[in-house]
Figure 1 (cartoon, rainbow over the protein chains, first blue to last red):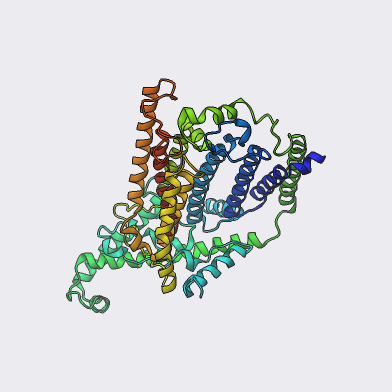
Figure 2 (cartoon, rainbow over the protein chains, first blue to last red; figure 1 turned 90 degrees about the vertical axis):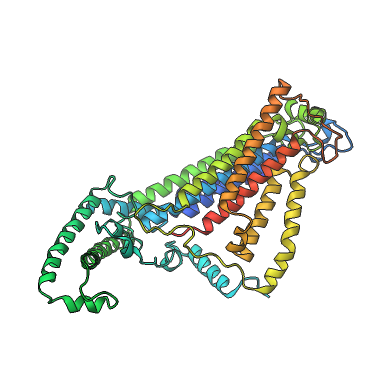
Length: 125
Length: 409
């Protein structure tokens, strides 16, 4: 249990992840769903960055040609976070564009109302 | 001094209202400005297709005009047929009109500049316009009925079983997942410990050999642009693909025979009117650009690189667009130019990396000298690759912003 409060970065990341997931599941508005997705993305970045940190070491910029690995933090998670950020930006842009087209089609961003409208329209024809 | 102009503050208030509203309906007047009603002039054949767009924005339930003409919608075919019927009807009436002059004055009244004897075309057009107006009214009535039904259903109490069941299941699943993850966090190695399994021979190798292998002082740059450069190429392609997809989803292509609003006809964003904002940002934007370039070209020496520096450059372009308006920005940067720069950046990236692979067998050794560690022109290919990535990211940021802000329904 003590470890849980030492790992508070990871704990915050996990809580953010679940918050984002619940927003994604419970909100009926598409924009809010996309916001939830972004919160989940951010929590993963926080987790990765926290895993790369080693207490008392420098950032992975080689100083004065000293290449002793025990002086610097882990550079790999930082690179992975970069990858994640790029993919998150791309998926967010794509999802927002789809939401705009959705709005053009149904004139509402509410998922339930749009499904209802679609059903009524089909019933009319 | 407020940086927001009067209209800007109003828009912001509207946006806040919109965000805070429960039902989350975008107000019609923000998103759908009335379209210029110029279809009649182009519709020479009078087959009724061109008029389908009328009333589309107001209802949304009848979107024949939005779909491709006569492809898959039965309702649409019926509609076109109906319009043809009206057209024939118009012909007949026109025949009457030529003999007896009883409706003559009526037409003259509607079209003063016309010759006293209206041509066949004009009479037909008027008849079709009347028919379309009638149709439109019918359609609007039907759409209103549907809207009322939807509203009634929305306001009616939801079937409590289904809705509550879904919510309860979602919350229970979320709480269970949270518990599992929290327990996992408690079992993880301590934060910041140097004995964690993540600190293994891979990161040790990157730190100890990175400088001699790649010549980059920044170990992260060595990882993403040399050891794992193929991964970064994939990221750049993802950005490019996302931009292309957004263009295809949001850009309004002009279809033949349809009076769609093209990108050139729409209103242009004029920029901020406030003089202090223009002066202050006019002074600071060059420095932001300079800082972005600094971060990009020093990617192998200091924290930063193509991704962060490219974002700064893109933000500077976005700021230019915001402050000085669209026409000013389009003098030196358009979405088309952005796409060309991105394609060129990707091509140069692929060419450089393939050269690297061809000459260096395992991808680690190449004929390019690594230079003195710590100087600007060092680290072999990382320097040009950083510039490519920076250009791609900056163009992505700006073109996404431009596409989303210039979109009209």
